[in-house]
Image (tube, rainbow, N blue to C red; front, side):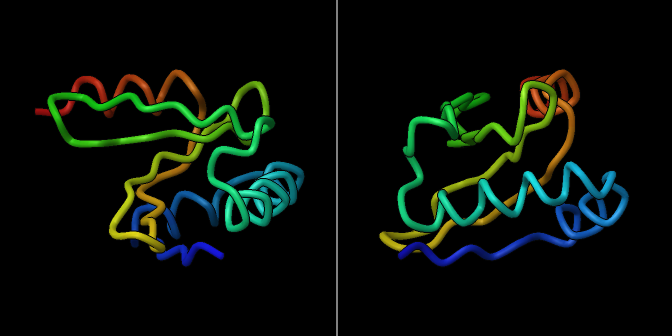
Length: 93
């Protein structure tokens, strides 16, 4: 099973999400911990400028951005809408 660590940014942004999105995120995290490439997660590497950033789908509008840390640990970097996630991570640096 994968270990998930979260950044302060992830924790802060998660706290502002609507309750129904939090429930969906928790369900997707459970799937992720067993298999980061479970089909309904739609795991995708976006890799802006070699930063090795990946996303998983919470629902049609929300995503979690993460990075693999080692063979059994990932860091959830941030959480937000699809458009916001892709804009901030593809535009950074």
